[in-house]
Image (cartoon, rainbow, N blue to C red; front, side, top):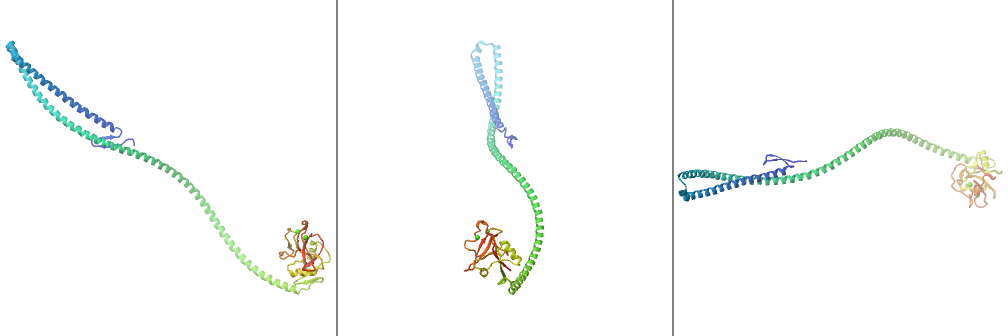
Length: 368
Ligand SMILES: [Ca+2]
Ligand SMILES: [Ca+2]
C-alpha cells in the first residue's frame, strides 16, 4: 500500500498521505502572510493619517502667525485676497481631509473589525490546523500500524505461501503414492482372487486327500488287524512246525550250525539258499540257546554287521539293535577292517560277540 486516501471535511478535498504534511505546511505559511500584510497596511495607513494631522497642525500654526503679525503690515489687499482664497482652499481642503480622516477612521474601524475577524478566522484555522495535525498524527500512527500490520501480513502471507507450496508438494507426493498404492492394491486384489481360487482348489484337493487318508487309515487298521491275525496263524504254524534233519527247534524257529567255514557274506548266501538267513539274536533266551548250540570255544558268524556305515550295526532282517552282548572292549574295528559280528561260545555265561574282518572263514548259524 503506497498511499492512504481520506475524506477531509475541512478542506473538502481528498488528502493523500504522501503530500499531507506539505499541504498543511502550505496552509500554515499562507495564514501568517495574510495577517502580516493586513498589519502592515493598517500600520501604513495610521502613519499616513498621523503625518497628515501633523502637517495640518503645522500649516495652521504658520497661517495664524502670518495673519496675526505680517499680513497687516506687509500685504496689500490683493495679497490679502489671495491669502483669503488660499485660506478658504485650505479650509476646504481641511474639511476634505477631515472627511477623509473620518472615512479612513471608519475604514480603519472596519479593517480593525476585519482584522479581528481575520484573527478569529486565524484562530479557527489554527484550531483546525491543530485538529488536522492531531488527525494527521493519528492517521500517521494508524498508517504506521497498518504498515507494520502489512509487513506482518506479508510475512504471514509468505509463510502461508511457503506452507501452501510445501503442502502442494506433499499433496502431489501423496497423490503419486496413492496412485502407486492403488495400482498395487489392484495387483494384490488380482493376486488375492487367484490365491482364493487356488485356496478353493487346494481345499477341494485337501478334502479329497483327507477322505483318501481316512480311507487309507481304515484300510491300514484292517490290514494291521489282518496282519496280527496272520502273524498269530504263522506263530501257531511255526509252533507246530517240525525242523529238518540237522536243524534244531527253539521257540518258533529252526537253527542250523554249519560244519564248513566260509566268509561272512558266503555264509549268508548259504543260509538264504536254505530258505533262511544268518541268525538274529533279539532276546537273552536266544543268546543262551545259541551259546548252547556251539561247542566249547567255537566262533560262528551271526547276522550282524556295520558293512554299510562304520559303527552303525544292523541285523540282516532290518530289526533295530537293542540288547547287545559284546565282549568288553568290542567292537574295536581293528585297523578299520572289522565289520562283521561273530559269536564266541563261553562255557560259563551266555557267550559274547566280537567284530572281525568279514573275509575271515568261520562256521555260521542259519535261522529259518
Ligand atoms: Ca567295523
Ligand atoms: Ca574286534
